[in-house]
Image 1 (cartoon, rainbow, N blue to C red):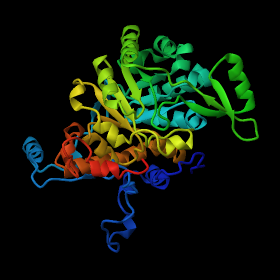
Image 2: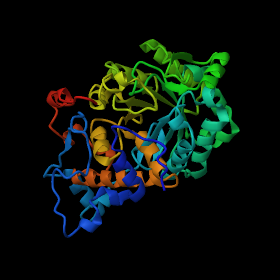
Image 3: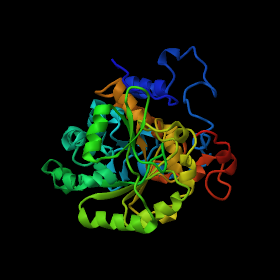
Length: 430
């Protein structure tokens, strides 16, 4: 039974918790209503935010489906949704689903038992996991970072998955990547090609800023003595302080040099880059891929966090749909990935992101809520529900692999370039 230790205002928390309890059954109306209930448009099943530019797009199945015919010929029978193959390459790793577990940083919500439970279930699901920044300077190397990597490694199979470790400016001072790369406990993942490092340049919830947490007076004193982070504004009368990490400073040349350093120093690791939803996101993504990144992660302004100023949460940065619209598919080399995160929790939003060019989508708040609801299997059930929706939607669209989705599978059609202007302009709060 859930103790509900975390909450997520503005997020479809109740629907996520229902999926964590009931799995794929939560995709449909309650089975007890069958035979008496009459269902149609307007029933509160999806809880999508139609003011969001991405949620405003509708998957629109065509009448004529040449790929379904190809599948029929391949199978020798009419295909069904179970014939959709969701296996996908994600940033150099083989993944059972077009999903990955998004980074949880050093905030209280993302650093404790919930993060370890999520790691264990992500391993069982066979999807990649990202470990967030600033965990080592704040919590030490073994108590959080290695605990999550160990929980993941205990459950993941031999053929899928991978662990990606972020490093911030403060992490670099602690030589996090060097510690991980040379650790015997991580050697099997490294030598099997399932270790990656992610250069984090920003995040969707607070574009242009570094990580933020709230620390008590004792922790503030410890961090000050250690010369770590900036201890800024007092928050309330209990002596709590705002702890700020630095976001780092990047130009195109600095980014290229950083990625060159990563590839030279950690040749067995996959190289990922995470960007905040900046107005130059197309140039940033193209620069990263040209410099050898295996994956570019775009965190839309809808992205969640453990702590951020409200003014950023409510109105800074580009919505995810606009970010994806500004990234040219032709800039992405074969075999590399575009990863998208921001308010992901159900199959419809995931399909829209995949159709706009994403290779996979990240689960952040939804994953934490799911393991909060059930630490043993909540995330697995949430992923089961999402996977069923993906299969149903792809089959309905006449596509049988996520990579076959294109912008043409969405309505309204693009008016020359990406997301229709009318949809984007009507976005309101992301």
